[in-house]
Length: 172
Image 1 (tube, rainbow, N blue to C red):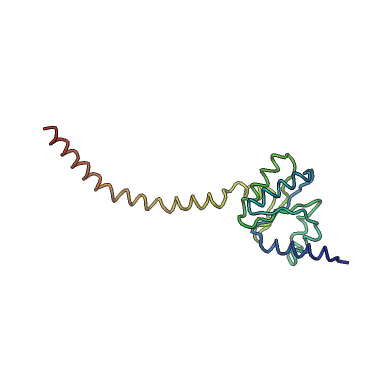
Image 2 (cartoon, rainbow, N blue to C red):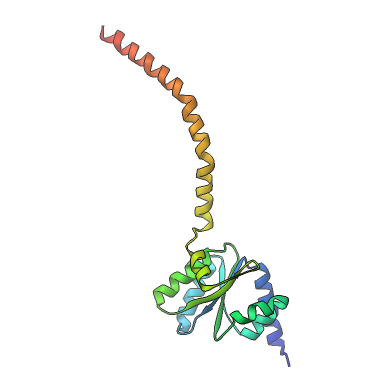
C-alpha cells in the first residue's frame, strides 16, 4: 500500500524528471554523509541536483518509460538531474568521484536516449555550454574579421605609400 510519503516522493521525482535536460544514474556507495552534502552543494552551483532514490519509486516516477529504465536501476542508485546544462553537472559529479575515489556512473538518459557508462564518459568530455557558445561566436566572427582585413588592406597600403613619400621628402 502506498504511503503519503512515497506518493509525494514519486510526484517530486516526476517533476524533476520533466525539468531535467539529462539524468544520470550513479553508484554512490562508499560516500559518507558529509561528502554527499558537499557534492550536493557543488552540483547546485552547477545547476544540477543529486538525489538518493529508491529504484522502485524512481521507476514509477518515469511512468510509461518505467519499463525502459527498469534494467538501468540495480543496487543502490543515486540520480543526477541536470537542469541548466546537460554536461556541467556531470563534469562536476565525475570530478568529485575522482577526487573522492568512490562512486561511478551506471547509465543515464539524455532526452529519450538511453546512455551507457561509456556514453556518459564521452559526454563528460564535451565542453560546457559557455565554452561552446564562445567557440561558436568566434567561428561566426571569423568571416567578418577576414572581410575587414581584406577591405582595409588597400587603404593600409595607400597610407604606407603616403608615409614613405612623406619620409622621403622630409629626408631631402
